[in-house]
Image (cartoon, rainbow, N blue to C red; front, side, top):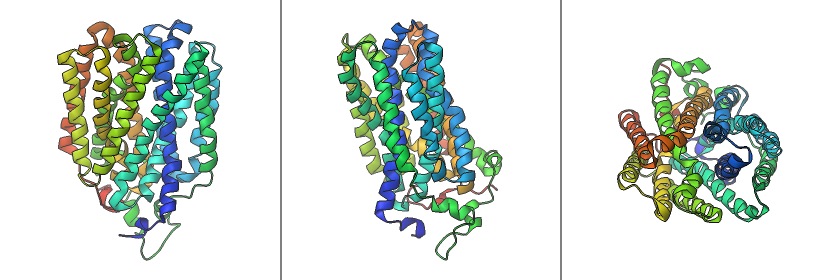
Length: 424
């Protein structure tokens, strides 16, 4: 093991909690809007299309945000941008609170999404670059798991604030914006990634890889579409795109589905959503234990395979009522195995000079898939019915599984200079 495996434990843990806090805010925000939208739908008299656009607004913002901040992170460094991206979350989280119509709320949430999107490539890249080789997967899965901690937190905040009436959503949005303040302040003191410093020639030493070994002939955004990296880009983007079509297409509608097909009470819907979040956290705990021992490929195949099987089962059995809660709990628990790997895989495939750019590009493509799933799912349910909608997303998951089996390489317990690919 080399220099990058010898960081003090407090450095690794500090980086872990501060960087993964962005995923927590993402989980909180997307979960809050998925429930609050059921009330905003009535308050703003939204059409079906506007309802889908509102839920997808922050995902749309993530597309340009992830590309821009990912590219900037490779040019300027990881730590320099980690407070700036969440500044978007703070400012436009507050403008969302005071929105008076659909247009204002849509624009606020889209711009908020720019900040969330920017945080994905920066945080995951920094975490991969400071994590020890033998347990890098555990650190990365743990970071992604914070998304569902944020989801659970949103339920805990939402439940007592429901008593405030139809305008409660403004208060839960405000809580989310204020949560970003201490995280921004902590990030201002975060150290720069040593791998990025090596790639720029700033940091040198006998026990460090050379700049040439770290860079592997790359250095520009367009390198993502050349030589070996082109095939890596196609593989990573296609699998993550397909995963997000199914995952977000269903996942952002859990409150809607529980209200429509299971429970009449909003309080029961919140509790059901909390139970689903708990299922996801359990899934991440198991995945965290397996991702380095079983390897990335096995965890990815298991997750996508389980998604495919459970969605086809939901179509065949035509589930409804309270049984939807344990069904979705099982689904998200195994879905997260694939979700974690698809999210951090780019940080292990791309070399340091384009690592954050590649992660940003893959994030953007995946969010395009998420927007597609979120926008069309209510229309599929309306036109085809709930069971056939599940069948559609099961088929999407199956295609992602086949591509993964054909293209995924094992990266577990290997140093990043070994897992990342040369341009030629």
